[in-house]
Length: 289
Image (cartoon, rainbow, N blue to C red):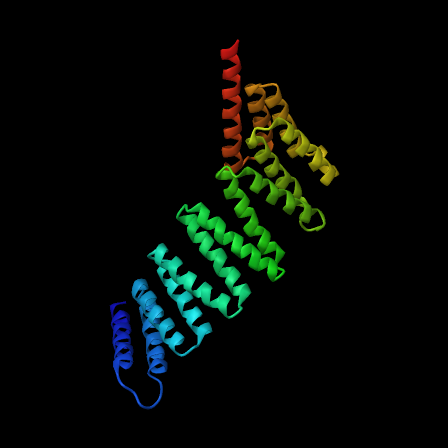
């Protein structure tokens, strides 16, 4: 490994020297770019990711001097993918530079891919607002390229995090819209009940009894088969327990559903919020009496 890194360092020094030299013939940035690429390859073989990332940045700068924006974008992307192994913040910064260039030269599918990748990195950092922002950009770009499935995958992520951040109406609108789209697609119809369940749980989180009752009626109109589903029964039972201010009934409805279909962490978290609201309401009633 150390031999490979030493070779990388040698090529990097040669490239740096090329850029500092005066040159009357040829192009020093082309010469340096070739050497930087060799240096980066040796650094990668030696698993010296930070050095590889740094050299790819230098390579990108050479390509910008040569007005080769596509190559520069790829070099920034390569830098980002090297830093991905060692430094998430540096990785994001380099991928954002790649994204800006791909947008500038009209490579929209590539731009969408990098928006999604950046969003995933912000997820890892638990920066949900930034993640949502980049998922939103990715969704718009995928939709513009008519890649609806990828656009909706990004939108579902936005809905998930919007609900976690108590932006329930935003999440509801996304889940309902994706459910409508799925109804007209035979391959996606199976997912409609899940989307409507998620929308319904977000309705419950809003704490508006009338809104959830109206939503259930709307969902029945959207998908007549929803009425006979376990997802509908869960929402209907939870709504009834809220109206009756019955925490035990609320808990039993969740247990019954969970015994057949395991609730994921996201649903469990949101339903716990609703249960806490119901408990607080029950205690308030007890205090009044």
